[in-house]
Length: 449
Image 1 (cartoon, helix red, strand yellow):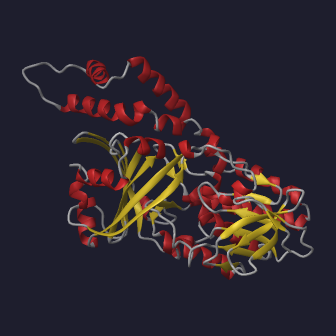
Image 2 (cartoon, helix red, strand yellow; image 1 turned 90 degrees about the vertical axis):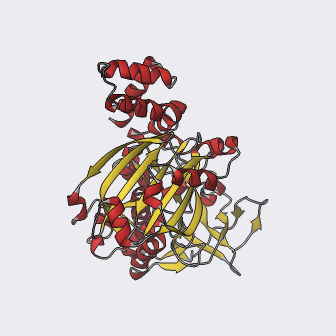
Image 3 (cartoon, one colour; image 1 turned 60 degrees about the vertical axis):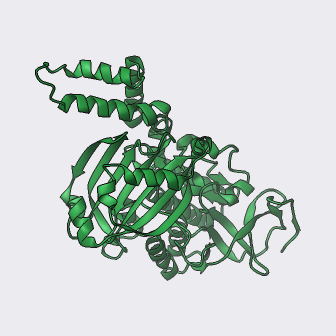
């Protein structure tokens, strides 16, 4: 029953519903939302999965890798049915400085066999596939629907959502917010801190079409094998990073750019992306490709310290809505954390509903802490600050490239200068003090160790 609406952007106060329409409402049919709905439906709970797009994945921007270990628990045998583009068997980390680059290239053929390590996928296909599993278990998908307000009792307990549909108030005993970065639902419930712009990046991506045979030849793979390239130094002075992934007959190439730095530069992201594609190390890989899609999306990259409160009165927060994106340089992961947090949110909600005690929703936090989801974020909580620091972003790529160039430059008849001398020279020419380098190395060891 509707009572009164507050000011624009405020939650709506309603009377306690006598018989909620659903046991649970999940807002957002991305990986986190579909995983939560799947767990709840399996537990025999009535659940509505609300999606603002016409179908799951229609509004998602993604150019990365889906890692499968959490899927082992959520959908056993997933790799036999999931819509995969390529299995990642080659992983590269590339540093760019001027026209130079230095790449660490790792290949592992066992990653191309069951149970696999990771795969590139189109989110429109992957999200839809995941939602279909939730629907088969009994979840109700409600597409093309926008949540416009959170419904709360006078005591502050979340009891549903208001949508843009006629008579669109939907009530439930539990609401799970999986509505993406800077979650509208979590903000209306008062769980989100202010000032998140500094912890948010803009991801821009181009999908470039190339024949499969051309991709195989250029990237040194065959069959269903694929390549994941993570790049530091190709963002023209804006803190962030770049990426290039192989799909079956397309490439995903893009940037992740810090919002404050991008605003300070006054440049458009597509201009920076065009310069990346002209780099001597990238241009041969994308040569002749046809642009089929350009997209942009905000990404939460602040890590552990930027997360909102994860548990409210009648509300749980998961996935990007909970800032669960691990941007730690070596590890750039998001979908697996969305899947894990959504799965545990659905599991905690189902247990609380079965016990008839919504105070047990707080078990969600315990489930996350005992799993990789919060354990990894907590362990790597200092990594985002280090990776996005001025030295790592702007000076260290040049230092590394100078050092490697010095090592491999043959300058006879002069004798070889030695690694320590080259390191000091490279540090000096890039404005890095040896004391700073040692301190950052120690911080890195503590962050990643």
